[in-house]
Length: 82
Image 1 (cartoon, rainbow, N blue to C red):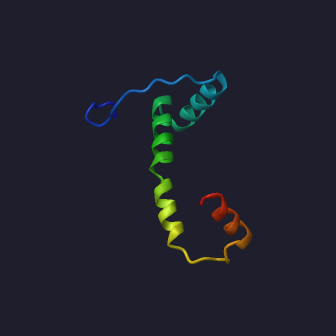
Image 2 (image 1 turned 45 degrees about the horizontal axis):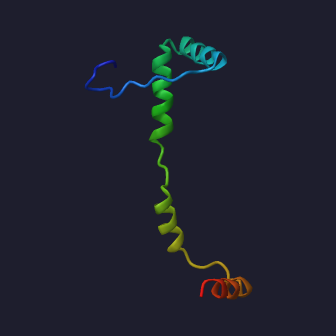
Image 3 (image 1 turned 180 degrees about the horizontal axis):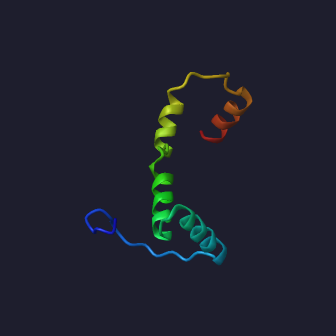
């Protein structure tokens, strides 16, 4: 999987000795290289759908109100922002 057409930019990271030992142990159990284990783990993590802040705002804005607005807060907000 080291074909440049398949893989993009090379990144270098520094890991603690403990983390490196854990990665090496998992790689040995799976019969893979440490790089393969790291790549698979990252690809799995970032392949899950993440809702962007703008998407959350749009989704939240379209939900029905679950409670009445706080009248005390609303009047204080209006006074402050005249």
